[in-house]
Length: 266
Image (cartoon, rainbow, N blue to C red):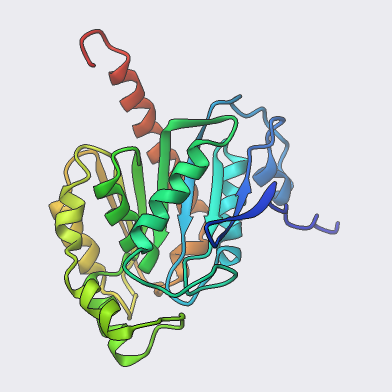
């Protein structure tokens, strides 16, 4: 039996030069299940939790459409975007990259049917770096999934050596900005919001002990999954592991919502 084509996004647009795409939950359920041939199930009605997808250096939103479809198939509204210096977005990669992630969160929060109090960011490699920093400066970001997150040293070295495939206007200025960041402090700044770190033990670009170090700096709720073998990109497209991360994050967001609803919780 021939498999159906992948589900396209529900909306494609741009905002201030940032190209993005949005996938919304199928209200009858089963966007993800249908692709695997499983029976559909009824998904939660809106308001839905939302997740913004931040890609790595040299990538683009289309490379993470599989995760967006999986998220939508599990009741999440998902927004993927091209970082500046990548894909269809305008401009070059610069110190404004963190603000761009926050802007995408605000854009998804304003979308009909999305719960603005349950929007997380999922980032891989450079995207993990941006996701954590964005959450540290934007309390409206409810949680983070970081996959093999790059650190400032990894990224500044890549810029200096010209190893990162992205449009850069001023490499020296970008390198200096990156060198001035501290992902450990950013993790500490999540202030009780959930963080799940995923890393492949076989990652030859960013050692898995970097995620272990970030985990040590994180407060609760937190979770670390280190998978034997693999490489820098293998976990990004592992549907079972991505579903585990989404389920854990959803439970933590539900727990936070329950705490907010208690008398005297503010």
